[in-house]
Image 1 (cartoon, rainbow, N blue to C red):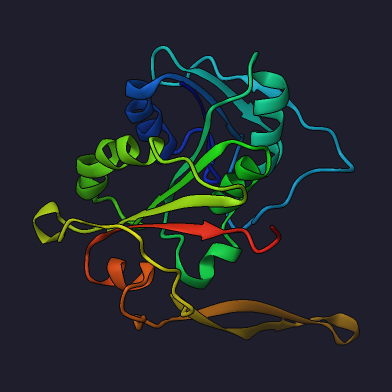
Image 2 (cartoon, helix red, strand yellow; image 1 turned 180 degrees about the horizontal axis):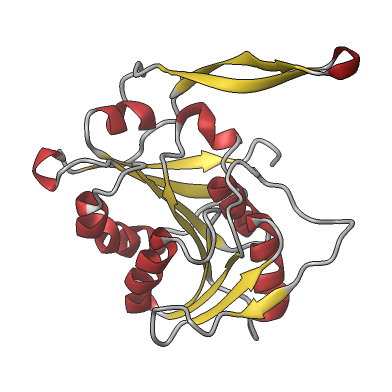
Length: 239
């Protein structure tokens, strides 16, 4: 199996390194990832500027073909599968993102956006995220088990698997919940604070998010709030 890995936290992030190590068990691994942070880029791609790709000689996982890219995560999937790799990938893995990508946040997520680009290109695609903390016990325990199951379950065009690992101690995790629906809620309800009044009548704003831990039963957000691994299928509305 030819596996293309990308993310939106940058090629040097801890999550992509751990994902590459886990993925090596399942096939030949190629990494094409942004040179730096690209969070909340959604499914954007570069059309009016060039994309620079460099081999990443110091990628710390032996046997992985790794490249940094100046573009978005969506660009990484496109240029990686269509040009960098000698053959098209069988599967795109996007992650492991630092921070959950579920509920309404999916629409902004460049982790999911890259996976949707993989699905658009005809690849089996899986997005993987975890809590924005330094506790990775649940992810490291279950990631190979989840990958083994999902890699054997190709999806219809336009659909991706979306996986979220709770950022809790392993002893506090209830296990894995499959077939989670996407919550219509949101982790943070946003408002905007005035930071500064600018010259010529301008105003500078800064987003201010209020954490709202309320979710519908059976959803991805509900699973995470209750310390379960959430696995579900998300359909790109554009299909």
